[in-house]
Image (cartoon, rainbow, N blue to C red; front, side, top):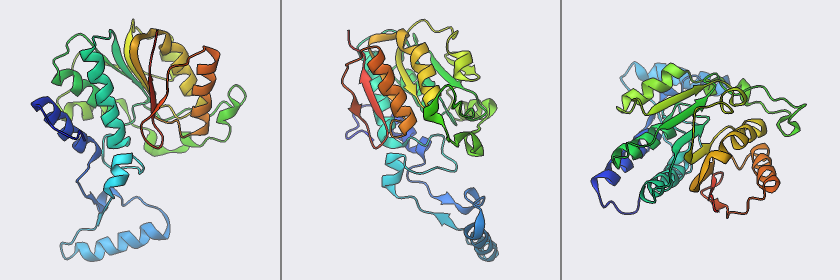
Amino acid sequence: MCAEVNSAEELYLDLLKLCLTRTGFETTFGQISKRRGLTGLALRSLSNIFGASGIELVRRVEPKMRAEGSYWPQDAETMIGLHRLNNLQECVTDVIRSKVPGDLIETGVWRGGACIFMRAVLKAYRDESRSVWAADSFEGLPPPNAQLYPADAGDRHFEQPALRVSLDEVQANFRKYGLLDDRVNFLVGWFRDTLPTAPINQLALMRLDGDLYESTMDALHSLYPKLSVGGYIIIDDYALPNCRLAVDDFRQKFGISDDVKKIDWTGIYWRRGK
C-alpha cells in the first residue's frame, strides 16, 4: 500500500488493492478443496469431521506472499500482489498528471484484477478521456509453437485449467466493483489475431502478462509503436526465461535503451523516452 494516505482517492485505491488481492482475508478450505493427491484427500476428510461441529478449516497466507504475488490465489481477482499493484497505480497516476496521451491496456488479464484497478484509478481521478483495454483469449494460453518460437518449447501453461477464465467471469468481476462501463473494452482471442488490428490509436500504458515468448513478442510488436513518449511499459513475467528473452530481443532489435526498473521478483517496467 501507499506509505501515507493523503486523499479520499488514495484511500479508495488502497482499499481496492486489499480487496483485489484478498490481503487480510483468510482463504477458506472450501476454496482450496480441489487439491489433488493424498494431501487433498486428508484435507477433505478433516473438513468433513470438523464441519459436523461447525468448525471450518482455513488456509493462512503470509502477508509477504500476498504482497509479492508469489502464490496462486483461489478467489482473488488478481495474483500480481501489492507491489505490482502499487507500481501500476504510480504509473497510471503519473500519466494522468503528466498528461501523457493514450489509453491503458493489459495483455493477459486472468480474472481481470489489474484492469479493474486501472479503471478504478481513472475513475478516482476523474479521467474521462481514456479507455481500458483487456486483451485475452479468455480460454487460457495457447500451446507453444516451438517451431517458430523455440524459447517456448516444453511450456505447459496451456494445460492449466485455472488460467482459463471466461469473458463472462471477468465482466462479472468488473461489475462486482461497479467498474464495468463503456470505457472498458475487451479484445477476445489470441494476441496474434487481435492485437495487430485492435482499434487503438495511442497508448499511455501497456502491461504485458502473457508468459510466453510468442505472446510477449506479439504484444510488443503490435503495441509498442503506439506507446506515447513518457508512457510506461510493464512486464509482469520477466522472471520467466522465455518472456525475458522476448523482451531482451525486442529491446536489442529496436535499440531501446530506456532504463529498466525492477518492481519485485518478477515485474519490471520502463518509461518510453524520446
